[in-house]
Amino acid sequence: MARRKSSSKPHSKWRLLWRGLGLLVVLVLLMQFWYLGRVLWWKAFDPDSTAFMEAGLARMQEKNPDAELRYRWVDYNRVSIQLKRAVIAAEDSRFLAHEGFDWEGMELALEKNLKKGRIVAGGSTISQQLAKNLFLSASRNPLRKVQEAIITVMIEALWSKHRILEVYLNVIEWGNGIYGAEAASRRYFKTSAASVGPDQAALLAAMIPNPRYYESHRSARGLLKRKAIIAARMYQVTVPR
Image: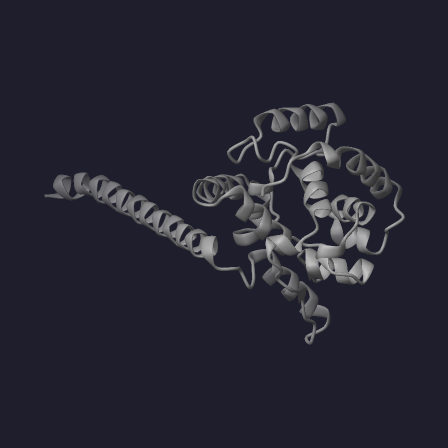
């Protein structure tokens, strides 16, 4: 009898392990269906908040409980074509050509990072950045990157490039508590997103990698250098109609 009991213990441990793994798989699948549901919803309806907005608001309210975000949605045709061009030139010059991932851009970014011995360039497309902004965090955790890739595939499969750029322009961070092109245009130039000119557009696009820092350092050498590069490139890109 003692032998039967001892031999059954390993089997029970394996059953528990497989049950645990099965439960984990179910939870992961349910999470993917939740993401898919949100992606489908936002295909037709405009987001009123994102994961990055919620994190930004929480960060601000730690210092000031009454803090609020500056965010105002505007339709695609109410964003200056100059800003559309500048953002694509700055963040994803092959936006219309790829299906969510710019493998060539990733390879170049990897080469730069290896050469410098640290992360100095990223190969994320506008679609990848949007997936992260809508649902995830700024963490570089490998699991987070895998989830970002899955959501990117969903967005690219279900949304048009027009819709991807429209949502991106409306939700990305442009300063401390400043989200979207309309709020950024009002904050920095006292004008609407529809009225942003080429020079202003290049500056806004140059701010995207580090918006909270550049909000108070708009004469930073790196920012002005990046602005000049974007200004030279922005007329070479095509924007979705």
